[in-house]
Length: 201
Ligand SMILES: Cc1cc2nc3c(=O)[nH]c(=O)nc-3n(C[C@H](O)[C@H](O)[C@H](O)COP(=O)(O)O)c2cc1C
Image (cartoon, rainbow, N blue to C red; front, top):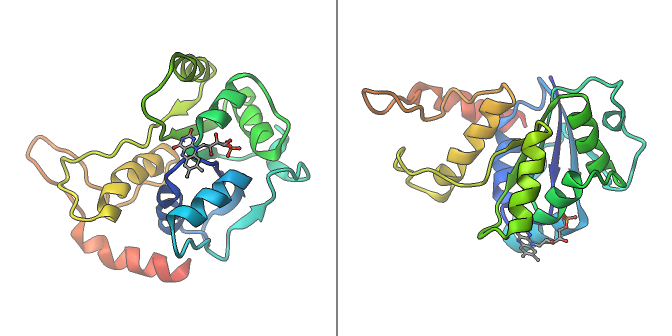
């Protein structure tokens, strides 16, 4: 499958990091765009932000990339983390960077566009922009972790959000905690598979 992953200057680089770690970059085509502010926030938040070698990186301004045209088929685009500034630009129809144009194309082609904002609290402008994007077909998946899996570490907590993103792009993590009427379900034996994937990336 083919994905565009973008990061903007909201807090939450760790969500991007965990997403990249849990996608098999050898099996899927991954294109990454980071805004200038995303780069700045990444430096602020993580000591060892690592992009898997198989990921294709593109400058924010370079429109010479396949996913800015509706004629190139891609499966989904995720913006994680998504700043309210970028969310507002997409809602207004702005498309003057590769990142914004790609989001615009995914909406017009009715392809999956998943935005992961972190901002809190919201003002009315944020809320209205979110409604506009939902009406246009985007999926807004706020970076709001859950606790019913009893996460024991920061990574566990972050993964409660990342697993929802993976579900949305059709790459569910077999280790993901799933609620069931009977209580916990977790594929513990899948830990080895996750380790193999980490090495591969
Ligand atoms: C350390 C830091 C954390 C930030 N966190 C957020 C955030 O969580 N959400 C948000 O919408 N903006 C946040 N911002 C502000 C954005 O970076 C700013 O609006 C920027 O213009 C976004 O540009 P971009 O969308 O092109 O990346 C943060 C800025 C800094 C420096």
